[in-house]
Length: 351
Image: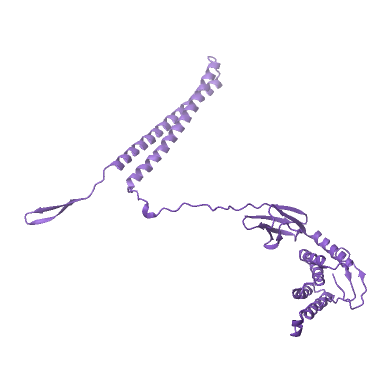
């Protein structure tokens, strides 16, 4: 939005910009703001209003050349010297031309909050521009169950709950978090896709009483249990006994399986023989013989598996007994005693 200089004659026209409504004039010189500078600053030679107007004029010159970024930088330098709704309107206009609708919306909100009541046309333009910005953005309404909580959008503080205004986000992924002293932090990541979003975050109150941890027991106060060194022979006995148990269990299981299959095949053979005897055909006799042989093979396999399993279990028991005897065997101790002989003395011991 372009604010004319009140000291010059202007000719307003209607052009199609943003929502087909913007005000232009034959002079792009910014509206002069009231001189509210400190007299002491003027006496010392510094005139912030003049510097502000100079940056505005430079921004207007860049605006005419459609150098939007350069114009925005000049307007922002003027804004840094003093905030004014005219400067905010110019920055918002350039930001919209650059497609930065979220930044433009922030400046337009300032314009609407500070624009005098006697400027209804300018207010209408700002309202329509803000509406266009909202159409390009995702409108997020953030709510929490706790008041005075700080709302952060991508790490930027946007106010405290309850927020008076909706949060406007550019398209893309954003992180919204709410935090308050004495409470935990609630965070939500969302993808802005141009639609309105109702976001409610719940804060959990932090625990008021710290959890008391038991004091560590001094190392010197803990009696050390006597440790008995484990020999390599004992380890070998135990490993062998475990392996024997595994082999024994597997052998018994496989043997049982084969015996059950043999019993099933023999039952089928007996049933077929009873059904056709004594006038069994050659095909039936061959089938009965095949079932008998299959049953015999499976009985043999079952018997072999039982033998292997029995050997494994016997080996495991034997190794466990040997390990137990070796562990309980008394250990030799060293003994030393003095001795005295005729003209001799010394120590004698056994190890």
